Amino acid sequence: MADANNAPPPRWLMAGTAERRQAARRYWLHDPVIGVLNVSLHYSLRRLPVDACSYLGSLMGALGQRRMPEKNELAREAWLKLRPQDSDPEVVDAALKRLWRQIGRTLAECSVLDKLWEQGRIKVEGVEHPRAVRAAGKPLIVLSVHLANWEALGRALIGLGFKGAAIYEVPENRFEHSIVLDFRKRYGGALVPQGSAGARAAYRTLREMDGIFLSIDEIVDGFVTWPAFGRPLPLEGNIAFVARLAALADAVVVPAYCLRKNGGAQLDVCFLPPMDLVRTGNRKADLPVNIARINAVFEPLVRENLDQWYYANAIRFD
Image (cartoon, rainbow, N blue to C red):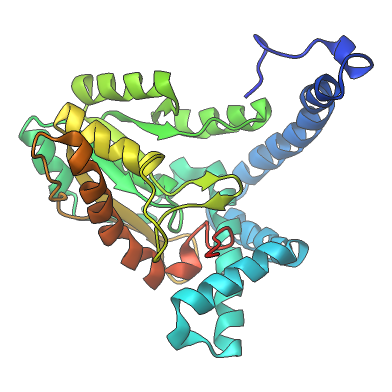
């Protein structure tokens, strides 16, 4: 992410290599325009009642489905691959409609995330699992995927009295980054950026606070690499990072997920029992085993709730 400390000089807009001109145009022209639009939308949505904000998001999601036919076809292919028992064309079309509206609702609800908790719109199950880890004095890693409004998980943890941090990918656009920092700051959520510095901060957080929260499905080169769904399991990225960090810090991993109820601004957050990760002392040998165990927990959840998975329109199988 470019910021004030490494911003390209304005003179690059008119001179220098093509690469420099492109970097300058992005920083000084493209990012401010897109960023101002997104910031304005974010704060405008915040002024609305929660239901109106979420509903408007669903309309924007429906618009996104029409404007991004390539992604819509990727989502269709994913549905037919992962849900062949539900391949009737009308069933598939209805699922894609739910998917895009759900994506729109989730993005819009970031503007009112604190209100979702305050208004009792986030129901929590299984909180005894992270509480037991904290009571035992063990480092806690809450692991999730981008189902429904995954941000509700961090909000629920803070609301339940946990003090920790979420690991996140820093947006390239500095204005969009300010939105991420702002809506999490409203409810007291701390953030740890991805990367080598973030890994060290995550380890410190595990030692000094209640734990960390991380969604492990991620985009690499435009497509999501995990869950595997029959593809080779990655030995790098978020899933490997969690497996290594858990071993290094002797942390307990608690899987969690969020689902949307009745298509509206009502969310169910569920914490599952701690994972049984192997710790033989040979971290290199343990890594692929633990990655497979993590995949085995989340892959069925994503498959079952594919129309609530944020990355369903960004997966390829070839």
